[in-house]
Image (cartoon, rainbow, N blue to C red; front, side):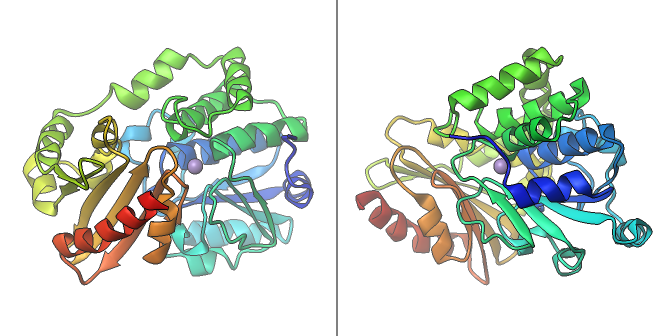
Length: 331
Ligand SMILES: [Mn+2]
């Protein structure tokens, strides 16, 4: 196995002086960590970088170096592109599909050339070049290899971002995609100044009391199906209002039902607004939930996928998903 970046992507990043970085909406630790880490690495090479996000960073990730430089204003993005006078590249990170760039996706994918760096299985390789490796633990791990290929320095700030990316996307080095190379990269990051206990504590020991109260409410909705092989939990807008929390605070809740030994798939139904349900699926072992998510127009990884449904109640969505999961568990 080589850990070399795809040549066209590598050359584009190496040769361009102005680089716009973008990732998917509701960015997780890998999306943010790989974006901020790559930004630090490129700036270290003397390049100009614009860190674009659709919305300001969730409070869960504000400890990551470079958060303060994130730009959410499309006018600023246009200005950046114009100033580059062609010496320009867009890099989309950890984003399996162009629509996942958010409501400005149509304009963003017009900023060419554009390359994609990602590890999502269903990535359709939108853009002029793509480096997609579904067996990788995280986009953050790939960014480290890109830095090595570029001969770039990985500062302690960049290392913190990439370590947070890898830590979150591997479930703290527990998931199947965690390889010897993942540990090798993590080791290199620690060598560059990362303190694993501080990153883990910032990621997992830094929550509000409201989040704990929300967790109580969400876990109280637990339903078990299919001889305790499928667990379903849900969150409603009312619960968020009552506990003064936001949907971001529900991150990792799905790991609790998933941790039950009999459970093969955990389902998390989230009420985005009335009649608009977002569904997260987390599986263990051989069950491929990306197949089920795909049937609803979603996607993701074999063990972690999601999709959205409009115009249906949460109960109706659950009733649609359960038979498909049953089928997938049998195959
Ligand atoms: Mn990822």
